[in-house]
Length: 115
Image (cartoon, rainbow, N blue to C red):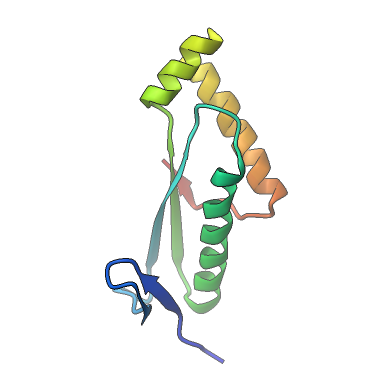
């Protein structure tokens, strides 16, 4: 059974049928966390939602590319690294590691690429 996928269009605030530009190559680019402090429930919610959508798309289409960005330079990060007296690199590596562990714990699939 090959059911249609409907998503809410934020511009129209209506459910619309998902019609891909190219059925053989679905692209999904999503915003990930800004890594300035320990992950929290606000970071987990979109990751779980995007993971569910990724799994639904993979079930219907043969090729889905899932890209998640991680913001690792930002005013909040600079402020946090200064307050903690550690480098931006050390701070972001630590928070990215913690975020990745949380994603694994939540049983979320890794994106094809992270930027």
